[in-house]
Every structure is written in C-alpha cells, then in structure tokens.
Image (cartoon, rainbow, N blue to C red; front, side, top):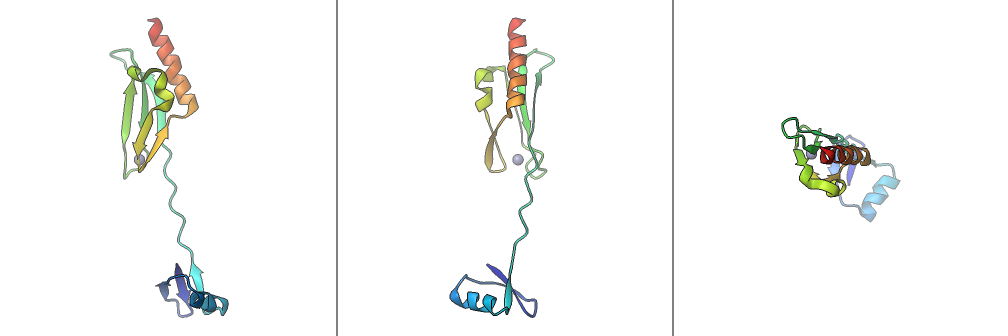
Length: 112
Ligand SMILES: [Zn+2]
C-alpha cells in the first residue's frame, strides 16, 4: 500500500500492525491509486461485402494502443454470437443487436 507522511512523502509499505498504528495516530494517510482508465468500448457492426454480397461481422477496438480489428465472414454462420474478439488481454463477443443484424443479413444473403 501507499501512504503519505505528514511531510508529504509517499512511501510504499507493507500493511502491518505498525502501519496501522501510524494511520490510527494520524501520522500518515493512505494514498489511493487513481482508478484505472476505463477501456474504450469496442465498435461492433455487421454489413455486406460489396463485391461478394457476403455478410460480415466486424469488431474494432477503440483503444489507440491496441487498435485491433477483426472481420469475420459468412462462414461464421450461426456461431456469430459465440465468435470471440481477442484484444486488450480479454475476449469479447458481439452485442446481441449486432448478432441480430448479422443474422438478418445472412438470411437475406441466403435468399439470393
Ligand atoms: Zn483492444
């Protein structure tokens, strides 16, 4: 944990009975780390490839340091809802409304 002494010095210390005595006596205060910056939401969409007429599902990370993008095609089929977009150390699946859009595009493309 981090503590700030009365002189303003910030120290990294182990949580211990001694630290607690210093805190209880008001000789130092706990320094809270700033909350981690929330991840930018991933942009999801579904569309049709102009040249082939195939539906696709696309995920693009809005985090500039990652900027991963992944586009899947019709072959994904009914497993679209389970397709995992791995980036930023985590896996995400498409939001329900985007899966619904993809499925309706697939259904439309199948009729052609
Ligand atoms: Zn990312």
